[in-house]
Image 1 (cartoon, rainbow, N blue to C red):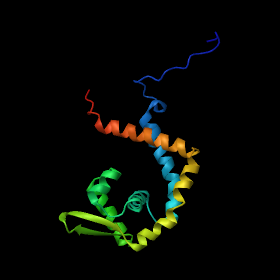
Image 2: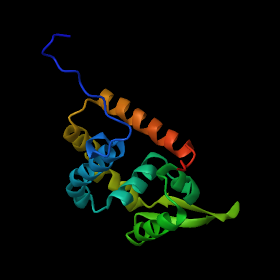
Image 3: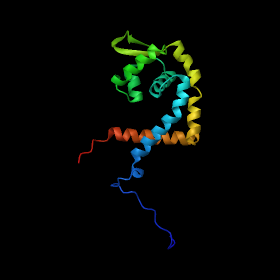
Image 4: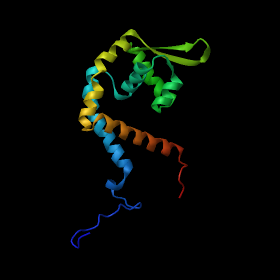
Length: 159
């Protein structure tokens, strides 16, 4: 290192500067994503949580409420009202599983299946807005999913 070069300071784990908070970076990026998604999803007629439910069903139709909740990291108390609104819009049908009455199955209606054509351009628009390549986005997505999984497994810290 040359005498005039200054070493890059390492962020302290005790820093209270927002720029050092990984969680703030993710939180603010989430808000930025929502700003990009909103006009795209307004054209499709869905909110972001509704879009996630529909995308999950477009990928794999005929799931239980529990399966959807697991995939989307949503409790049934949050997911059920969302499903009711989508059903009222005619996009899906909920019914008791004949093999196990305790389970509620969720299936796309013909209208809900057809809506996928209208939403098909959304992922490409989002990718373009990120400035990432497909490979970079997949790699980052895997890292974020790993981070999420580690956090879910971590014991609650006590001070």
